Length: 383
Ligand SMILES: *[C@@H]1O[C@H](CO)[C@@H](O)[C@H](O)[C@H]1NC(C)=O
Ligand SMILES: *[C@@H]1O[C@H](CO)[C@@H](O)[C@H](O)[C@H]1NC(C)=O
Ligand SMILES: *[C@@H]1O[C@H](CO)[C@@H](O)[C@H](O)[C@H]1NC(C)=O
Ligand SMILES: *[C@@H]1O[C@H](CO)[C@@H](O)[C@H](O)[C@H]1NC(C)=O
Ligand SMILES: *[C@@H]1O[C@H](CO)[C@@H](O)[C@H](O)[C@H]1NC(C)=O
Image (tube, rainbow, N blue to C red):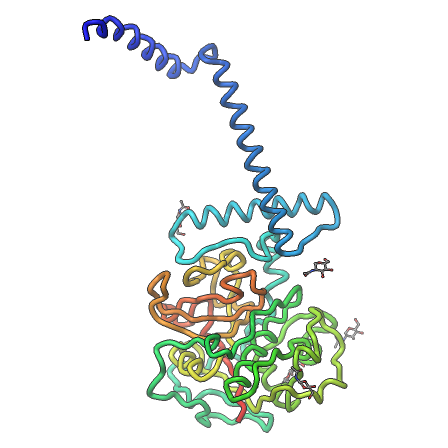
């Protein structure tokens, strides 16, 4: 007790000197320590880089990716690293209700993603302008025999269930991957036909997107654009569509294989196109069967969407639609966010989104729906 006061002063002096030293930032102060710190920083950066490289290699293995040259690999690593930084910063922000993560597109810049994986649809002017306040009876109904306006197909019924998930009924095939072919319109249409076929008592059969790409794409030699409602009509006129097994997907446009057009593993009678901006009508329709919709996939958040919550788009999402999806269900009170939501099937494989599916905000203030999903909903009929 008596011996402690004499030690106090020297200790205080030493601390004071140290503080002055730091404040003055004199280079002679702790020069060795500073060098050590800088080396540590450098070392840390190097370690982070090595960790990122490890993750990149794991990502390459998961997605079976390889590159033609060391240069290309380095370039792709830089893009991957920049995407991962965006993904982690966005997740840390916490203002999103969903999660970003690694997808098949983590080595692509956003421009490359847009060029390769969107652009399969563009809304032609004549598709707009249907009455906003019309009821489902005013839906445009087309059959191979021609237009049948207002026939009341799929009339809105009084009791629409609070939630529907056609996946749980075994009526939805696993998410497929369109590859580097802008055939989202064919994938969205085929998913709707597959489900309807099953719901109406058939087997769940994976049907052929390739048949539609080869025989009903607007492009000349390359996958370019198509329309899900045209695809339904095409199947209706052809009196059916082949299975994926018989007419498999190759991911680019080839000449239409006429000898397979007579193989009919499922059929469609007509098409219903709902009035725009009516999520209530989409809901009533989805209660009966999955519905193909158009969508703006143009926000960077969509490229990196990995589920866990309800997607609302970002500032880069508008009604300039460039993609198609199939709505296979809906619900209220999402476990992650408490919101109303749609369940949509995408065509980016099962390593994107939630096993290839995306939850989209439903009944928002936006009449066109999130990213334009309510602009142009269409579904096939069987009889
Ligand atoms: C992985 O890619 C190689 C060539 O890029 C291909 O031959 C192989 O079939 C792919 N494997 C899988 C499991 O996708
Ligand atoms: C988090 O996101 C919000 C909304 O996009 C944005 O306004 C904010 O600046 C972000 N914060 C950070 C730290 O990035
Ligand atoms: C696709 O099929 C529909 C229905 O038969 C047709 O109206 C449309 O012109 C076709 N488009 C192309 C590019 O073949
Ligand atoms: C399609 O491409 C071929 C060869 O590139 C060309 O000869 C043909 O005229 C094109 N057809 C149309 C309709 O553009
Ligand atoms: C599709 O139809 C063909 C011809 O009728 C048949 O051989 C085949 O088993 C059917 N189913 C599938 C899944 O391909």
